[in-house]
Length: 549
Image (cartoon, rainbow, N blue to C red; front, side):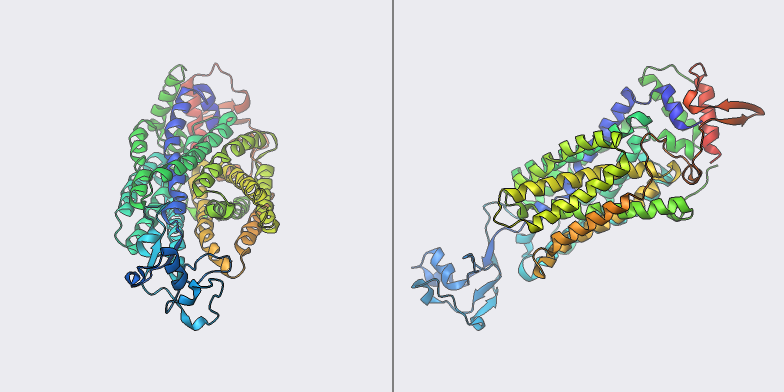
């Protein structure tokens, strides 16, 4: 008997499941606060070269000092990275006569002066990560996502080996430790290392929460639980805008977005381990205790009642699972385009705090629409077209002229909505594609691929020096290609979660079969199981069926 039939008897979606989902959604709020923190942590305010010996110009206004010391760009703004080797006093008479002799222009020699009207301090102003050091500033996000990439492999394997709850707790504890160490960083090297380790730790939270919650709910509410969990990401996205607006100093900003993890650690005490995972790993007595707790909390009557080892290699040993792994890995390229858009707040022509809030709030209706579509159209079509429309929206903004200042933000926000819809679907979809014994390994592998995309996304911004629209063209192309690959994946709408590899390779034509136990043959038909069977009989049958995988 399949685990879903046991869930139907003890309550597949009652007070117990709602309680668990609510607690699991709390750490989900924290994720975007760290994943998108680079927008504010490494923000670069307007700046110009520091001008030495300003006391010699006491009779000049600050604007006049800048005029004779800093060359102007074609749009009339002062250069951020260059200065005159000698004061150009003739510009006081006619500022339009900019020197054509580049020999008198040099890079900043005495540091920079920053505009602190918007930020008290960021890592850019702390360590002068501008101009020639601009790449190090963008690399901060890459270091974080490299950590997330490594964490996906580590926690994907460990959570299938040692359990969902234990690894989620480990992930949260280390997130707090490394998050606080990041806030206490005294050098760029220390920040780079601690942010990388924070990414490793938070990867476990990102990876485990959604499958953990889905393993406790029945088929009918699987989509709802996935969308609900994803909505809390959008809430965290909007809260990030508020927190960053209130906290303008980067040390305290890191403390503010890390602190809530402590609440999640405390609340996790009341969340039981996944009974589905416990049964699949032969821990029957512990699973029975949790199922009894579920039955009682859902108002159902009480009942009474050596696994094989798998690894990432198992994802590629059999043909159907190999195809699923390769295609789902490609589909997770959605992260490349998603973070490419999410980390370009200044490219929409709006205030960056407003941009962050709008990009967060647009995700909620996108998730609501996807909730309807994945249940009506199916996972595969929804996933594919969400990705393709994301790419087309990004591509449209490459073509739309800069002068269309109202249209460009609208198209960008639509693209962000499509990308979030694709991201929401891909986690739900991938969780349903892999069997219980390999689900976290599968999620770890696909998340690994996604975080590679997330790590590369901020570095692609540097290609705007080659061609200004090259980053957007790359984000567009990857999204469309990934959407096309999604058509190759199988549909999982209203399909039972697979429990063993054979459920993937050779799906049964009929769910009815005979079960032989202790010399007695019993006809088992999960779809038409009679309610009069005792909970003990149902539980033993489920354990026996799963243990034979």
